[in-house]
Amino acid sequence: MNSPTSPVGAGRTGLLLAQLIGSRRFRLGLVFLVAVVFLLTLAHKTELTGAISEWDWPLPSTNAATTTTTTTESEQGVPEPKIEQSAPTTADTGDNTTPQDPPTEETLPPVSNLNLPHYTGPSEPFSIPDASTVDWSQFAYTQYVTNTNYLCNSVMVFELLHRLGSRADRLMMYPKAMLPDPSAASATTDQGRLIIKARDEYNVKLAPITVQSRPSNDQTWAESFTKLLALNQTQYSRVLSLDSDSTILQSMDELFFLPPCPLAIPRAYWLYPKQKILSSQIMLIQPSAHEFNRIMAKIEQASPDEYDMEIINYLYADSALILPHRPYDLLTSEFRQPRGKHEKYLGNTEEEWDAVRVFNEAKFLHFSDWPVPKPWLRTPEGLRREKEPKCEEEEGGGNCVEREIWNGIYSEFRERRGRVCYSRADTWGMSGRRRRRRRMV
Image 1 (cartoon, one colour):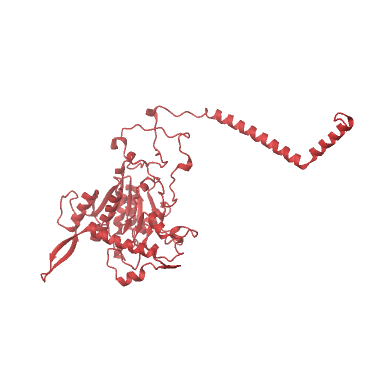
Image 2: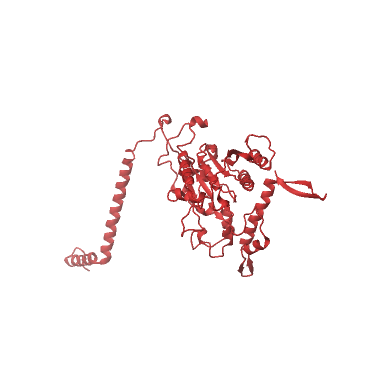
């Protein structure tokens, strides 16, 4: 046997080595080894650079007295609003706490833990700061009243907010003639008594106003300009204006903590995308004398076919912050749409319609079922049966969940209206028979 050190053994060894180096597998292995060495060297260099760069940044100040901050963030990562026009100062609120330094990169929560302001399903779209740290008196839900029917509707909205435990103020703008003195202990009219009930039982703040009306081709909307007086409520940083021909299903306090903007409002999803129109049924407003003057100037120029919604779209169509209509602006007519025709509300064509889930996630529901009248008006039984949602044929029977929800919404409204706005009183008719009649509280 030849020794590896012999001439013959050395020749064979060299031949094997040459074959190994020339093989494709060896070359690939060598390239991989070089790449690994390069990456390890780069990572080590980056670690050293990062360690050095940490000392290049100024350390956070530990002297709170010298810190000047204009915005803060809550623990949930949602900016607390600092509205320059009417935000209270420390002296105004009596808050003597020392402002904290802005959070540094090391103290910020990971991105995955932030409650970002986008819709993610039936859970909260975004969170609000710790209630104990918020000056809720700078926020308000607003209602405007033009007649007796809408007075009752407004009180119903405030009753819901009271029952849901909303923390923001509640402001009712009503015709001064209904209750000239907002501090009156009693009233001689039904309207006055109901306004006092709202003030005393549901903690509603009262604002007597002059109803805003203009000559119109449709008297139904002639006084809708009154809604826009919400822009002049500059005692608040933000107000949430809600149409009273609606019902609230969940608190919407979180909307007050959206990024600062003159107006946040949903689109009329039932018209989208053919018409990109803003829906004034719910509006988050940053009151401002400047914006109010713009509104009033445009109202003066309005044609007989233009109303509050047209004014809002003219001024803010391209600048408003868009609220997601889901869950903040659901129409009752959505439950009357045939299966497979809900993509405008769902926002996509892939998601399967689930009436129960949609109803449970919704926060604000607007009555809109033409030609079915509004729920405080009498609806002929034949019309109701004709227009109520149809039952879907399914294996084993029909599915009537949309019909049950739709009829339940109307029935609940009427029951609550009688409970909140009316009381029963015994009266005697001309024939001497006793009868029951309902009058306002």
